[in-house]
Image 1: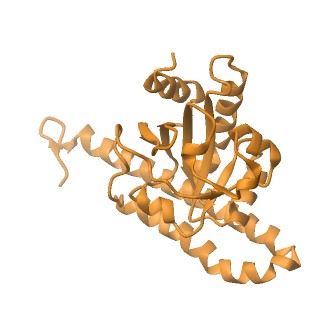
Image 2: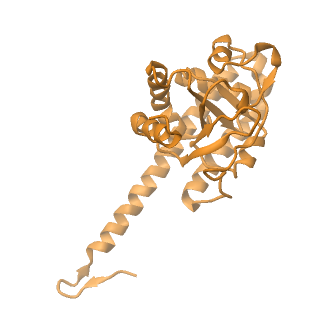
Length: 248
């Protein structure tokens, strides 16, 4: 219903503001969709050029088409899921494979011969976890910000060694996670969650999602920070996490 200004016999400013907001929202959805489709097509081209991965490409082709469309539908319909672990609660314990990169093994202070590990075995006081997806345009856009946050942590005498940063690819295979790592030059460890095992335990959160975990030896990590998005400013996000962790 359009509100009419009785003095001027014209639609009110509120009507035009609403239309403007809708146009802005529509543009954001379209831009995100094109960004997602662009990376998907680039991924398909790279994998197609490798004969050894040809069969994988055939299996993933439908996935590359379905995921961007699903993302756009979620943006339009604003689909919501069950909530993530609450602040003060515990983070699910799921096993991950030991990184193949020796530098990542040393960064996390893990035993190389163990094969698998759980988050509470990481040698740190705090672990920052980003739940991302290779197909998420927000994750793609904010990747340089996360790289900057990693460098700031490692350059800080008060944080280096105490705070670690990892990423977990929701629904992403090891191949897809590796593609994302190379595409955006990610310096910190990334792990696949190809069957959505952890993602389901986290309430199927949207991406990117950030958790701050207090590591407790022989116990599940405690959640002290939980936030959807917000990585456009590395300094602010890091300050919020450090303040919540009590490491100021």
